[in-house]
Image 1 (cartoon, rainbow, N blue to C red):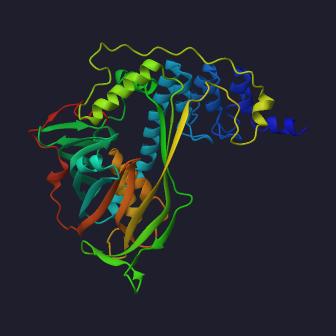
Image 2 (cartoon, rainbow, N blue to C red; image 1 turned 180 degrees about the vertical axis):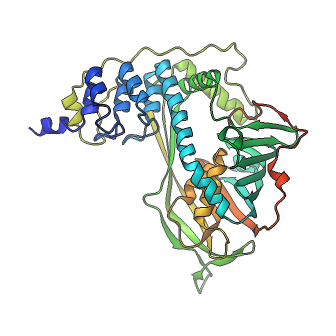
Image 3 (cartoon, rainbow, N blue to C red; image 1 turned 30 degrees about the vertical axis):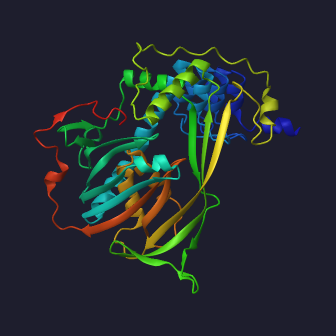
Length: 439
């Protein structure tokens, strides 16, 4: 009898599992569309894993969340890439981007109001990228970011355009957020050398989406996250005989140093959807990149859209078998996994200062604005952790499995007079919508 009571708990999941679109349609407004079952799967996860196209379309039309991850740590988009149906991947990707925009728009009024309440300031952050791989460490960049804040506007000047997958681009770049503008005009990037600007688009074109689908279908399904559950902080000690807590100046700020214990970066990849030809191509591209060549995705060949894969074999698992399986032991519903996991422990330190004029909450608001830069997104994730008292004026954060960044807040000053021209696009700059194709 326990089986029956268990199977009644998740009516939307059951409809999806059994392909009962009619009942799903009648229940979808009554029950929580984002509810997770014992495996952490939402109804959308199941619809994707089982290739239920009608259910997928119905769930997405009612706002089923795409970003949510199951117990195994995979989103419904990741499962769609594994299944290999191009139309489904495209649908989910579009919905994911739409939901991200909507969430940002919901937070935007509060973000702008908070920026207005903060005093105007100038701040400098120094990034020093390091690696335990000697040859890599020698070529890694460093950068000083200069941040001006005035009213609801922020400007960041940097020489590091982006840092991703062991590739980085140097330049003279300014990133401007203007909270008084409508969303489509609020984010702008200036290339000061080429005298070009690009507005960060809120909506991608059909070609952009389909290009991204091609990349997703041809690459490993990746998930990397910092495991923060076991993290503890202990005071860093100095001195050979008489040990005492380490306390030093970081720039003009007094700071207490802490050791971060138990920091683990977990990176996972799946590739059951890739052919042998894909694997060889990807290997060649990565080898070319490590030698300093920026190989194009198509390697100069005429670009042909990826076709959908043949669907995986039909699952013979019954609803009762699925729903009574212990958590973390989900029966196989799609392709057999080709899976690899790496765990790397990091030794890191953080210096916390009681003197710094900003609070951590204020910093998070600034970082949310400049999060399109991936290394700033990593810093934001780190600062979201429960830190010791004070402000993190110096931190070590993992960027990639082989690369860490030391971030130092080396200067800060409140300003009474900020030049409004800093937040304007110079009149002699020309617009190039594709100057920064990844943004």
